[in-house]
Length: 422
Image (cartoon, rainbow, N blue to C red; front, side):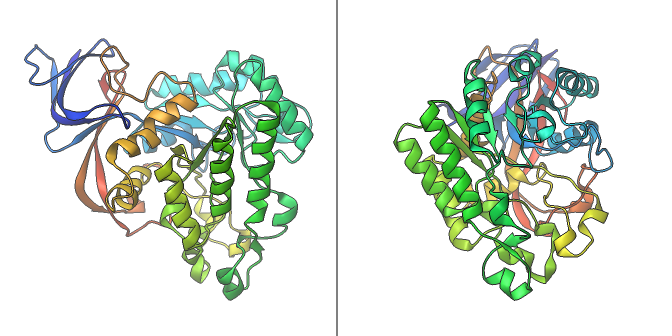
Protein backbone atom coordinates (compact mmCIF):
# COMPACT_ATOMS: atom_id res chain seq x y z
CA UNK A 1 0.00 0.00 0.00
CA UNK A 2 1.18 3.49 -0.88
CA UNK A 3 0.48 6.05 1.83
CA UNK A 4 0.83 9.78 1.24
CA UNK A 5 1.07 12.30 4.10
CA UNK A 6 0.32 15.80 2.82
CA UNK A 7 0.95 19.30 4.17
CA UNK A 8 2.53 18.36 7.51
CA UNK A 9 5.44 20.07 9.23
CA UNK A 10 8.20 17.48 9.40
CA UNK A 11 10.20 17.56 12.64
CA UNK A 12 13.41 15.62 13.07
CA UNK A 13 15.88 15.75 15.93
CA UNK A 14 17.86 18.92 16.58
CA UNK A 15 20.31 19.63 13.79
CA UNK A 16 18.25 17.73 11.25
CA UNK A 17 15.22 18.90 9.27
CA UNK A 18 12.23 20.95 10.32
CA UNK A 19 10.16 21.91 7.27
CA UNK A 20 6.84 21.56 5.48
CA UNK A 21 7.05 18.47 3.30
CA UNK A 22 4.94 15.65 1.89
CA UNK A 23 5.97 12.07 2.68
CA UNK A 24 5.31 9.08 0.42
CA UNK A 25 5.45 5.63 2.04
CA UNK A 26 5.50 2.27 0.27
CA UNK A 27 6.55 -1.25 1.29
CA UNK A 28 7.00 -0.17 4.93
CA UNK A 29 9.63 2.40 3.96
CA UNK A 30 9.77 6.16 3.41
CA UNK A 31 10.19 6.51 -0.35
CA UNK A 32 10.03 10.27 -0.93
CA UNK A 33 10.19 13.45 1.14
CA UNK A 34 9.60 16.61 -0.84
CA UNK A 35 7.19 19.43 -1.50
CA UNK A 36 3.94 18.69 -3.33
CA UNK A 37 4.29 15.00 -4.13
CA UNK A 38 1.92 14.13 -7.00
CA UNK A 39 2.60 10.39 -7.29
CA UNK A 40 -0.25 7.91 -7.08
CA UNK A 41 -1.28 6.65 -3.65
CA UNK A 42 -3.80 4.26 -2.06
CA UNK A 43 -4.42 6.31 1.07
CA UNK A 44 -3.80 9.94 1.97
CA UNK A 45 -3.55 11.70 5.34
CA UNK A 46 -3.99 15.47 5.33
CA UNK A 47 -1.62 16.68 8.06
CA UNK A 48 -2.36 20.38 7.60
CA UNK A 49 -1.67 22.19 10.87
CA UNK A 50 0.04 19.14 12.37
CA UNK A 51 3.60 18.06 13.06
CA UNK A 52 4.93 14.81 11.64
CA UNK A 53 7.44 13.28 14.04
CA UNK A 54 9.56 10.15 13.97
CA UNK A 55 7.64 7.60 16.03
CA UNK A 56 8.04 8.15 19.76
CA UNK A 57 10.21 5.60 21.59
CA UNK A 58 9.87 4.77 25.28
CA UNK A 59 13.03 3.25 26.75
CA UNK A 60 11.50 2.35 30.12
CA UNK A 61 8.07 0.89 30.82
CA UNK A 62 6.37 -1.95 32.68
CA UNK A 63 3.87 -4.13 30.81
CA UNK A 64 3.37 -6.53 33.76
CA UNK A 65 3.12 -9.62 31.55
CA UNK A 66 3.75 -12.38 32.47
CA UNK A 67 2.40 -12.72 35.98
CA UNK A 68 0.64 -9.45 36.76
CA UNK A 69 -1.92 -9.29 33.97
CA UNK A 70 -4.56 -7.92 36.35
CA UNK A 71 -2.61 -4.62 36.23
CA UNK A 72 -1.65 -4.58 32.56
CA UNK A 73 -0.72 -6.95 29.76
CA UNK A 74 1.01 -6.62 26.43
CA UNK A 75 -2.28 -6.14 24.60
CA UNK A 76 -3.62 -3.33 26.80
CA UNK A 77 -0.17 -1.82 27.30
CA UNK A 78 0.59 -1.54 23.60
CA UNK A 79 -2.87 -0.06 22.97
CA UNK A 80 -2.17 2.56 25.63
CA UNK A 81 1.29 3.22 24.16
CA UNK A 82 -0.22 3.60 20.71
CA UNK A 83 -2.63 6.28 21.93
CA UNK A 84 0.36 8.05 23.47
CA UNK A 85 2.09 8.18 20.08
CA UNK A 86 4.70 5.49 20.78
CA UNK A 87 5.79 3.24 17.94
CA UNK A 88 8.39 1.37 20.02
CA UNK A 89 8.64 0.60 23.74
CA UNK A 90 11.16 -1.24 25.91
CA UNK A 91 9.67 -3.22 28.79
CA UNK A 92 11.39 -3.92 32.09
CA UNK A 93 11.93 -7.48 33.38
CA UNK A 94 10.36 -7.30 36.88
CA UNK A 95 7.52 -9.64 35.95
CA UNK A 96 6.59 -13.03 37.43
CA UNK A 97 8.60 -14.96 36.46
CA UNK A 98 11.39 -12.43 35.94
CA UNK A 99 12.56 -12.02 32.35
CA UNK A 100 15.96 -13.63 32.90
CA UNK A 101 16.01 -16.37 30.26
CA UNK A 102 15.72 -16.81 26.50
CA UNK A 103 12.30 -18.45 26.64
CA UNK A 104 10.73 -15.35 28.19
CA UNK A 105 12.50 -13.05 25.72
CA UNK A 106 10.95 -15.11 22.92
CA UNK A 107 7.58 -15.00 24.67
CA UNK A 108 7.57 -11.19 24.77
CA UNK A 109 8.41 -10.97 21.07
CA UNK A 110 5.87 -13.62 20.09
CA UNK A 111 3.06 -11.97 22.08
CA UNK A 112 3.79 -8.50 20.75
CA UNK A 113 3.96 -9.72 17.15
CA UNK A 114 0.68 -11.60 17.62
CA UNK A 115 -1.01 -8.43 18.91
CA UNK A 116 0.76 -6.34 16.23
CA UNK A 117 0.52 -2.83 17.64
CA UNK A 118 3.40 -0.85 19.10
CA UNK A 119 6.74 -2.66 18.77
CA UNK A 120 7.91 -4.19 22.05
CA UNK A 121 11.57 -4.74 22.91
CA UNK A 122 12.33 -6.69 26.10
CA UNK A 123 14.92 -5.59 28.64
CA UNK A 124 16.33 -8.61 30.46
CA UNK A 125 17.40 -8.86 34.10
CA UNK A 126 21.01 -8.32 35.16
CA UNK A 127 20.78 -10.99 37.86
CA UNK A 128 18.89 -14.27 38.10
CA UNK A 129 15.43 -13.54 39.52
CA UNK A 130 16.71 -9.99 40.20
CA UNK A 131 18.28 -11.23 43.42
CA UNK A 132 21.70 -9.66 42.85
CA UNK A 133 23.52 -12.95 43.46
CA UNK A 134 24.23 -14.51 40.06
CA UNK A 135 24.59 -12.84 36.68
CA UNK A 136 22.19 -13.83 33.93
CA UNK A 137 23.58 -15.19 30.67
CA UNK A 138 23.49 -11.72 29.19
CA UNK A 139 25.33 -12.66 26.02
CA UNK A 140 22.80 -15.32 25.09
CA UNK A 141 19.94 -13.03 26.15
CA UNK A 142 21.17 -10.35 23.76
CA UNK A 143 21.35 -12.90 20.96
CA UNK A 144 17.73 -13.80 21.78
CA UNK A 145 16.71 -10.14 21.43
CA UNK A 146 17.21 -8.41 24.77
CA UNK A 147 18.10 -4.79 23.99
CA UNK A 148 19.42 -3.91 27.47
CA UNK A 149 19.75 -5.29 31.00
CA UNK A 150 18.35 -3.99 34.26
CA UNK A 151 17.15 -5.10 37.67
CA UNK A 152 14.81 -2.10 37.64
CA UNK A 153 12.52 -2.03 40.62
CA UNK A 154 15.50 -3.18 42.65
CA UNK A 155 19.00 -1.71 42.82
CA UNK A 156 22.10 -3.79 42.23
CA UNK A 157 23.27 -3.35 45.79
CA UNK A 158 26.74 -4.91 45.55
CA UNK A 159 29.37 -2.67 43.94
CA UNK A 160 31.43 -5.72 43.01
CA UNK A 161 28.43 -7.33 41.33
CA UNK A 162 27.70 -4.14 39.33
CA UNK A 163 31.34 -3.95 38.25
CA UNK A 164 31.19 -7.54 36.98
CA UNK A 165 27.90 -6.84 35.17
CA UNK A 166 29.38 -3.80 33.43
CA UNK A 167 32.46 -5.72 32.32
CA UNK A 168 30.45 -8.72 31.10
CA UNK A 169 28.01 -6.55 29.13
CA UNK A 170 30.89 -4.61 27.60
CA UNK A 171 32.20 -7.73 25.88
CA UNK A 172 29.23 -7.64 23.49
CA UNK A 173 28.39 -3.90 23.67
CA UNK A 174 25.47 -4.55 26.02
CA UNK A 175 23.82 -1.77 27.98
CA UNK A 176 23.20 -1.85 31.74
CA UNK A 177 20.34 0.35 32.98
CA UNK A 178 20.77 1.22 36.64
CA UNK A 179 17.99 1.72 39.17
CA UNK A 180 19.88 4.00 41.60
CA UNK A 181 18.63 3.52 45.13
CA UNK A 182 20.50 2.78 48.35
CA UNK A 183 17.87 0.71 50.17
CA UNK A 184 19.71 0.97 53.49
CA UNK A 185 19.24 4.75 53.38
CA UNK A 186 15.63 4.53 52.23
CA UNK A 187 14.72 2.39 55.26
CA UNK A 188 10.92 2.61 55.64
CA UNK A 189 10.54 5.90 53.74
CA UNK A 190 7.54 6.37 51.49
CA UNK A 191 8.02 9.87 50.01
CA UNK A 192 10.67 12.56 49.67
CA UNK A 193 12.25 13.49 52.99
CA UNK A 194 11.48 17.14 53.67
CA UNK A 195 8.81 19.62 54.57
CA UNK A 196 5.84 17.66 53.15
CA UNK A 197 6.84 14.35 54.75
CA UNK A 198 7.06 16.17 58.10
CA UNK A 199 3.67 17.83 57.62
CA UNK A 200 2.04 14.52 56.66
CA UNK A 201 3.83 12.57 59.36
CA UNK A 202 5.25 10.11 56.84
CA UNK A 203 8.71 8.55 56.80
CA UNK A 204 10.94 10.24 54.26
CA UNK A 205 13.41 8.99 51.66
CA UNK A 206 16.51 11.23 51.57
CA UNK A 207 17.78 12.43 48.21
CA UNK A 208 21.20 11.06 49.03
CA UNK A 209 19.78 7.52 48.72
CA UNK A 210 19.56 8.14 44.97
CA UNK A 211 22.59 10.37 44.63
CA UNK A 212 25.11 8.01 46.26
CA UNK A 213 24.12 5.21 43.89
CA UNK A 214 24.25 7.51 40.87
CA UNK A 215 27.77 8.50 41.89
CA UNK A 216 28.78 4.87 42.53
CA UNK A 217 27.58 3.61 39.18
CA UNK A 218 29.02 6.54 37.25
CA UNK A 219 32.39 5.98 38.93
CA UNK A 220 32.23 2.25 38.23
CA UNK A 221 31.57 2.98 34.55
CA UNK A 222 34.48 5.41 34.58
CA UNK A 223 36.77 2.92 36.33
CA UNK A 224 35.92 0.06 33.95
CA UNK A 225 35.69 2.21 30.82
CA UNK A 226 32.23 0.83 30.11
CA UNK A 227 28.91 2.48 29.31
CA UNK A 228 25.95 2.80 31.66
CA UNK A 229 22.46 4.29 31.54
CA UNK A 230 20.97 5.86 34.68
CA UNK A 231 17.20 5.45 35.02
CA UNK A 232 14.63 7.99 36.25
CA UNK A 233 16.86 10.62 37.87
CA UNK A 234 14.98 13.05 40.10
CA UNK A 235 17.34 15.33 42.06
CA UNK A 236 19.58 18.32 41.39
CA UNK A 237 22.66 16.55 42.72
CA UNK A 238 22.05 13.53 40.46
CA UNK A 239 21.93 15.86 37.47
CA UNK A 240 25.17 17.54 38.60
CA UNK A 241 26.94 14.20 39.08
CA UNK A 242 26.02 13.11 35.55
CA UNK A 243 26.91 16.51 34.07
CA UNK A 244 30.38 16.41 35.64
CA UNK A 245 30.88 12.80 34.55
CA UNK A 246 30.03 13.63 30.95
CA UNK A 247 32.50 16.51 31.07
CA UNK A 248 35.16 13.97 32.12
CA UNK A 249 34.27 11.73 29.19
CA UNK A 250 32.45 9.01 31.11
CA UNK A 251 30.20 6.92 28.86
CA UNK A 252 27.03 7.65 30.81
CA UNK A 253 23.53 8.43 29.56
CA UNK A 254 20.52 9.29 31.67
CA UNK A 255 16.76 9.57 31.60
CA UNK A 256 14.05 11.32 33.53
CA UNK A 257 10.25 11.06 33.42
CA UNK A 258 7.51 13.67 32.94
CA UNK A 259 6.46 13.50 36.59
CA UNK A 260 9.90 14.73 37.66
CA UNK A 261 9.57 17.98 35.70
CA UNK A 262 5.82 18.56 36.17
CA UNK A 263 5.11 17.59 39.80
CA UNK A 264 6.64 18.12 43.24
CA UNK A 265 6.28 16.44 46.62
CA UNK A 266 3.30 18.73 47.25
CA UNK A 267 1.28 16.43 44.99
CA UNK A 268 1.39 13.92 47.86
CA UNK A 269 -0.64 16.30 50.04
CA UNK A 270 -3.86 14.85 51.47
CA UNK A 271 -2.11 11.45 51.27
CA UNK A 272 -2.59 11.26 47.50
CA UNK A 273 -1.33 7.78 46.67
CA UNK A 274 -1.55 8.46 42.94
CA UNK A 275 1.53 10.65 43.43
CA UNK A 276 3.49 7.91 45.20
CA UNK A 277 6.35 6.88 42.91
CA UNK A 278 9.90 5.56 43.19
CA UNK A 279 12.10 7.56 43.22
CA UNK A 280 9.70 9.93 44.97
CA UNK A 281 8.57 13.30 43.71
CA UNK A 282 11.02 15.93 44.89
CA UNK A 283 11.08 19.72 45.40
CA UNK A 284 10.54 22.66 43.05
CA UNK A 285 14.32 23.22 43.02
CA UNK A 286 14.82 19.66 41.78
CA UNK A 287 12.21 20.23 39.06
CA UNK A 288 14.17 23.29 37.90
CA UNK A 289 17.38 21.22 37.86
CA UNK A 290 15.75 18.45 35.82
CA UNK A 291 14.59 20.99 33.23
CA UNK A 292 18.08 22.51 33.14
CA UNK A 293 19.51 19.02 32.58
CA UNK A 294 17.13 18.43 29.68
CA UNK A 295 18.05 21.79 28.15
CA UNK A 296 21.82 21.36 28.28
CA UNK A 297 21.88 17.69 27.26
CA UNK A 298 22.91 16.25 30.61
CA UNK A 299 19.70 14.21 30.56
CA UNK A 300 19.55 12.34 27.26
CA UNK A 301 15.98 11.10 27.10
CA UNK A 302 12.48 11.30 28.50
CA UNK A 303 11.01 7.90 29.43
CA UNK A 304 7.60 7.17 30.91
CA UNK A 305 8.37 4.52 33.57
CA UNK A 306 4.77 3.49 32.83
CA UNK A 307 3.88 1.50 35.98
CA UNK A 308 0.25 0.32 36.08
CA UNK A 309 -1.36 -0.80 39.34
CA UNK A 310 -4.80 -2.07 40.24
CA UNK A 311 -7.02 0.42 42.09
CA UNK A 312 -6.89 -1.80 45.18
CA UNK A 313 -3.13 -1.28 45.32
CA UNK A 314 -3.52 2.51 45.41
CA UNK A 315 -6.74 2.87 47.41
CA UNK A 316 -5.02 2.10 50.72
CA UNK A 317 -3.06 4.00 53.37
CA UNK A 318 -0.16 5.92 51.80
CA UNK A 319 2.50 3.78 53.46
CA UNK A 320 1.01 0.58 51.99
CA UNK A 321 0.25 1.89 48.48
CA UNK A 322 2.28 0.60 45.54
CA UNK A 323 4.80 2.90 43.88
CA UNK A 324 4.24 4.06 40.32
CA UNK A 325 1.98 5.82 37.85
CA UNK A 326 0.92 5.18 34.27
CA UNK A 327 2.51 7.40 31.66
CA UNK A 328 2.03 6.32 28.05
CA UNK A 329 -0.97 8.51 27.28
CA UNK A 330 0.26 11.64 29.06
CA UNK A 331 3.99 11.68 28.26
CA UNK A 332 3.95 13.68 25.03
CA UNK A 333 1.29 16.22 25.99
CA UNK A 334 2.92 16.88 29.37
CA UNK A 335 6.37 17.21 27.78
CA UNK A 336 5.10 19.61 25.14
CA UNK A 337 3.04 21.66 27.60
CA UNK A 338 5.71 21.97 30.30
CA UNK A 339 8.87 22.06 28.15
CA UNK A 340 8.17 23.35 24.64
CA UNK A 341 5.28 25.73 25.23
CA UNK A 342 7.13 27.73 27.95
CA UNK A 343 10.20 27.92 25.70
CA UNK A 344 12.54 25.59 27.58
CA UNK A 345 12.95 23.34 24.52
CA UNK A 346 12.26 23.44 20.80
CA UNK A 347 10.15 20.81 19.10
CA UNK A 348 13.30 19.37 17.54
CA UNK A 349 14.88 19.02 20.98
CA UNK A 350 11.77 17.27 22.27
CA UNK A 351 11.88 14.86 19.32
CA UNK A 352 15.51 14.16 20.15
CA UNK A 353 14.59 13.37 23.78
CA UNK A 354 11.59 11.18 22.93
CA UNK A 355 12.67 9.49 19.70
CA UNK A 356 16.12 10.06 18.21
CA UNK A 357 18.25 9.59 21.34
CA UNK A 358 16.26 6.68 22.77
CA UNK A 359 16.82 4.92 19.44
CA UNK A 360 20.56 5.60 19.60
CA UNK A 361 20.88 4.47 23.24
CA UNK A 362 18.92 1.25 22.58
CA UNK A 363 20.65 0.67 19.20
CA UNK A 364 17.39 0.77 17.25
CA UNK A 365 17.33 1.77 13.58
CA UNK A 366 14.63 4.36 14.21
CA UNK A 367 14.06 7.86 15.53
CA UNK A 368 14.43 9.92 12.35
CA UNK A 369 12.51 10.72 9.18
CA UNK A 370 14.61 10.12 6.10
CA UNK A 371 14.17 8.47 2.72
CA UNK A 372 14.97 4.77 2.91
CA UNK A 373 14.12 4.56 6.63
CA UNK A 374 11.41 2.45 8.21
CA UNK A 375 8.09 4.31 8.18
CA UNK A 376 7.38 4.68 11.91
CA UNK A 377 5.73 8.08 12.33
CA UNK A 378 3.62 10.01 14.82
CA UNK A 379 1.37 12.87 13.72
CA UNK A 380 0.40 15.38 16.42
CA UNK A 381 -1.61 18.58 16.67
CA UNK A 382 0.23 20.62 19.28
CA UNK A 383 -2.34 23.42 19.16
CA UNK A 384 -5.18 21.22 20.35
CA UNK A 385 -5.94 21.83 24.00
CA UNK A 386 -7.46 19.04 26.06
CA UNK A 387 -8.25 18.01 29.61
CA UNK A 388 -6.65 14.77 30.77
CA UNK A 389 -9.37 12.26 31.64
CA UNK A 390 -8.04 9.08 33.22
CA UNK A 391 -11.40 7.34 32.70
CA UNK A 392 -10.68 7.34 28.96
CA UNK A 393 -7.23 5.78 29.14
CA UNK A 394 -6.68 2.58 27.16
CA UNK A 395 -4.53 1.06 29.90
CA UNK A 396 -6.12 -1.49 32.24
CA UNK A 397 -5.08 0.80 35.09
CA UNK A 398 -5.88 4.43 35.87
CA UNK A 399 -3.26 5.29 38.51
CA UNK A 400 -2.38 8.76 37.27
CA UNK A 401 -2.27 12.02 39.27
CA UNK A 402 -2.93 14.09 36.12
CA UNK A 403 -6.73 13.82 35.97
CA UNK A 404 -8.12 17.26 35.11
CA UNK A 405 -4.82 18.77 33.95
CA UNK A 406 -5.13 21.15 30.98
CA UNK A 407 -2.51 20.28 28.36
CA UNK A 408 -1.68 20.76 24.68
CA UNK A 409 -0.86 18.10 22.12
CA UNK A 410 -3.21 15.52 20.63
CA UNK A 411 -1.96 12.38 18.89
CA UNK A 412 -3.78 12.22 15.55
CA UNK A 413 -2.17 9.33 13.68
CA UNK A 414 0.43 6.66 14.33
CA UNK A 415 2.07 4.83 11.42
CA UNK A 416 4.10 1.68 12.10
CA UNK A 417 5.95 -0.10 9.29
CA UNK A 418 4.03 2.03 6.81
CA UNK A 419 0.59 1.05 8.13
CA UNK A 420 -1.83 3.44 9.80
CA UNK A 421 -2.51 1.78 13.15
CA UNK A 422 -4.15 4.77 14.84
